[in-house]
Image (cartoon, rainbow over all chains, first blue to last red; front, side, top):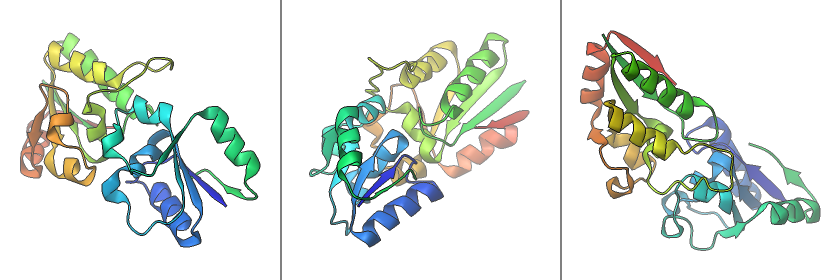
Length: 93
Length: 116
């Protein structure tokens, strides 16, 4: 299961997507303003994999030391692969 | 005349940040006193190191710097910085960190307030 989040953490959509991913113990893809969710201080009790679109992360000036250490940086090609390979994709919040 | 512009949304995901900057620059070129206040997710607009190369975006970081250079007073809400986990040393030079009382005073003394 993969949950894709594009909304920033201060929006109902962003908060809902994160909560759903956490409650389902799914993996999560963060893109657009959703990349702000990857900040280390925001992550508590999440056990799935976290993928972050690197282009959107760099665009917003987020640096590696600010984000979750285990976050996996991906590009668009990898994003497509993830969506194709996953049995269920929930998106986009 | 003075105008306060409040930006609540982070850059690039919506048009809010670019529109706030466009309106701020438009104001100063017409000799309007403009104060741009970044709150909530909008504080991310003032982050250093926004890398737009390879995208079709115009840099919001450069837009904020243009505002400062053109005479727009740019303020960042201290509480929002904390909520958004942005350290003060990650902000572009020239922005002023203020508290909610100071923001209230900015809005109170402005002739017009525009919210993005």
